[in-house]
Image (cartoon, rainbow, N blue to C red; front, side, top):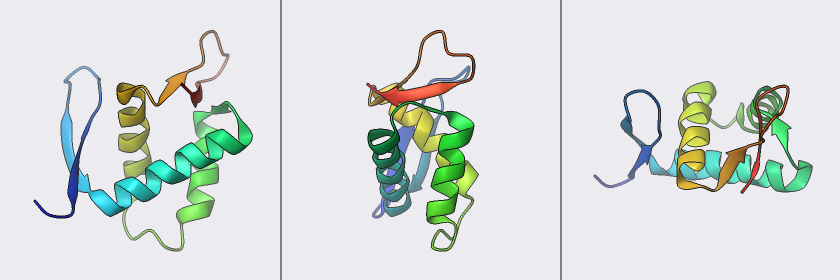
Length: 93
């Protein structure tokens, strides 16, 4: 399929989902940019920053794409959960 990408993330079912490649890349770039600029962030805070950045120009559900892309980035080893953090913090691997 032209214009789609496959995101694989590990959960109980090892799902593979097919999503729009352009939106995936925009979400990925936004997540990584903010982790580089701000350092480790709680997932809820990272989502809030990403949502503020994309809400006017993103036609689909930001939370849906955020969850898929964030989990895919973890699966691919580009970001990781911060060990022993009180909340669910993530950082660049």
